[in-house]
Image 1 (tube, helix red, strand yellow):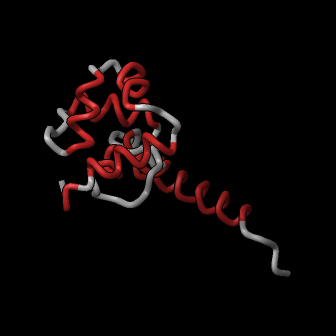
Image 2 (image 1 turned 45 degrees about the vertical axis):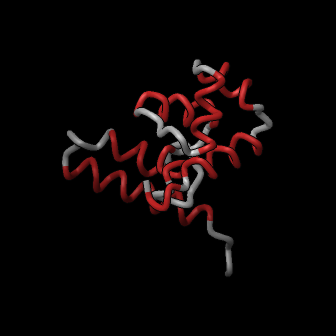
Image 3 (image 1 turned 45 degrees about the horizontal axis):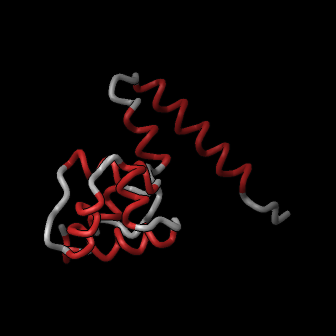
Length: 111
């Protein structure tokens, strides 16, 4: 994990969400001591534990691991991209047009 930000970010997000270590452990289905070990940096999470923590804290696992500075649980683009693996070129072009139309709709009208 880059710069081993996981312990710091886990504690920060846990506190921002108003959880004690014990509450987070209960919500994520983990032993309370596990959260303590993670925040102390003495243990690293398994993939399953990272997934549980990300879901419980509603934050991206990439953020917890220090890969990105974006906290979103799953970015909208990532969620959409997962569905495009089998999309046709025409479908993708249509979606790009829709995305552009929505972005333009959201822009303030400068006219």
